[in-house]
Image 1 (cartoon, rainbow, N blue to C red):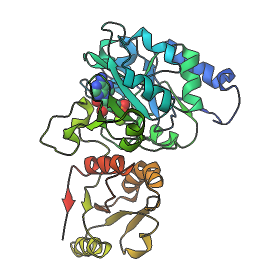
Image 2: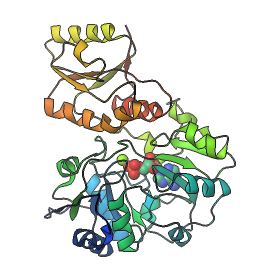
Image 3: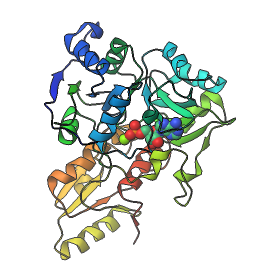
Image 4: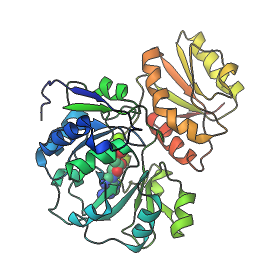
Length: 352
Ligand code: AMP
Ligand code: MG
């Protein structure tokens, strides 16, 4: 479907106000959703591009605005557990425990899907459906006011870094969607963890805001889709096979010391290249490069997660030729950070 050039309405809301649902901007955003238009709004992970999950028209608009491959299903966002019965066949016991513990929050649960209850496009024809309840007052108020299950992928152009501010959404989607609700920068900064609860032992299909360790504390054994670490395996989550989050310039992860990373910078400089470095506050002063982004603090990986997409986008503005990035420990929220960085780098890792 061709995306028509439209005027994108822009509303700004303060996420700290009481009775969010009564604000006119929220009511107008919800009204657009009931008319099957698509609207970007903040969640606690990244900005989402929402549309009525029951409407073929709204779902087509989401895929068209993003340029998203049609075999990549959307996550359905709800504001109350009571909405589940509209499209889920049965709630497994593990899912019940996870919902009680982590919702609202950055956890998407895969359930058996009641065929025909939502637009086919939203679930990409699968017999399962991914659902989450976001922990953001603006997102919850809009969903509740609309009275609909809202399909919402990240509000970026497909392939680019996910948006953690309304400005990022504007850069990618202005003129292609009906409205953007600006509620400030998001908190977690990486997408939700996706866990499949349709199997005996639940399986993590995408690492994200809730860690494996946190999940295991609540439901015991949790497996990880082998495709997350072995790129020759086919991922169970269709979206995981695509290149994602990529900045314009090639990105390389450097498996080594900061001295070794500086050697790569020096070699690039000799070749006349403009070099960008993705590091953290602890190491930023060490490097001699054209553009350096200090992405949070290594000692607190949550701060790295919350600014990783801002970091990746900033290299486009700095107009560098090549980017070298430090690596992070593959544990806790580091699983999500490394998963996103490896995808953004097209799995390219350099070693001296
Ligand atoms: P995004 O909305 O851009 O964060 O992407 C949603 C992610 O959830 C993609 O990786 C999808 O493939 C995944 N997903 C959504 N629904 C399902 C499902 N029913 N089964 C497996 N993965 C899913
Ligand atoms: Mg996305």
